Image (cartoon, rainbow, N blue to C red; front, top):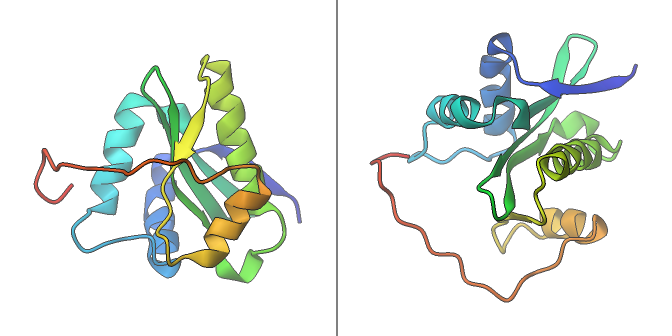
Length: 141
């Protein structure tokens, strides 16, 4: 069966959150439904899903701030890993960002997640010599 990549639709939201939970991308302090809603308000065409038939098998949330693009919530159903779905999602997000004039893309990976670090290494991403800081403006976000 062929995998298709498209923008997320409202009917996909529950399945995407289940996928993020299954792949351990969610955190107790983040509401994934709110994350999706906020992303869709700003860049609805950058919240992508991969489907195989009727099954939702992958996701990526991309964003662009005018200076750099960001990738979040890159997920592939564990039963379908190793088939290029994650790579295809990242490539489509990169294509859409480039079409917006985005000159570079960044992402964050937890250091202990060695298999994901290897995935991004294989896609040509490198570990920039930066420290990421954050501050919550909305509690629980």
